Amino acid sequence: MNYKLNYILHLADNALILGHRLSEWCGHGPVLEQDMALTNIALDLVGQSRSLYQLAASIQDEGKTEDDLAYFRDVIDFKNVLLVEQENGDFAQTILRQFLFDAYNFHLYQKLLKSSDKQLSAIAEKSLKEITYHLRWSSEWVIRLGDGTEESNRRINEAIEALWPYAGELFIPATYELEAVKEGLGVDSASLKELWSTEIKNVFDEANLEVPEESWVQKGGKNGIHTEKLGFLLAEMQFLQRAYPGQEW
Amino acid sequence: MDNNWPLWEVFIRSKSGLHHKHVGSLHAVDAEMAIQNARDVYTRRSEGVSIWVVASSNITASNPENGEALFDPANDKVYRHPTFYNLPDELKHI
Image (cartoon, rainbow over all chains, first blue to last red; front, side, top):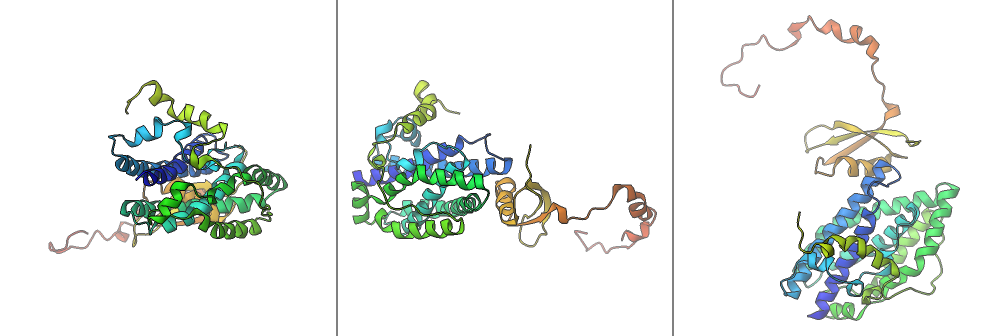
């Protein structure tokens, strides 16, 4: 059962941490329209994480709630990939992080529709509509930035350089992923690499961007070994529940 | 705000069968982005099933100064309103 809980937590943590990162843009977007787009996507992701945490809590069956899982676990308990905890940086970096993740998430959730777990496949079906839009939005922006001005092209290239080492981790399955695949619950993330690469290449081609060579990969997030950035994120996100446990609206 | 993106007018159809209604405007670099922005700005609460965007620069508006010539002549032509017909009682919703 442990693999099942870990697998769902991994999916939930990816959504929550990326959603929280995007929420940091609230009120800081470059233009009103994009401020709303960023925060809409943030809300989509936080909403997806809620459904997944509820499922995880019911698997765990220790009387815990979605809030316990989001607010009372420490860095080492979080199973999100390193990519999603990276800082927002400039708009280009936020866009690229989103695009690299959306392209992966889109194909992952399409396959999760066939999960042996009925609840997980129902969550995937609902989430996929949102993720399809996220991918469309972030792809459009990568093309605009890459094929835009000299400055936007420079910035998106800097983002590629900064984030590329974190992309590889998506396709290196953790033990609980492999067990979830065996049981028909989950998807073999290594099998998504080709679909992802095609997605990236098509958009980069249109954006006049070079796909970097395969190189050294930063990994560990799936097993709770995170970059220092996650600690700061959790400190802010969890502050209220840690300081005033059980507070409600 | 210093923003050189062109302005777009947004029209939303709230239900199939109804017509598109003007709901507001927004900035975007092109039509595709205008649709995406309209989706995020104007349909967050399930307001619509279809979106039109039109570059504001493509709209020709009547000049308020010509208001008298354009609209006042209709004021004393009450016979243009279909209020002089006797309708049978069985007819409802008119």
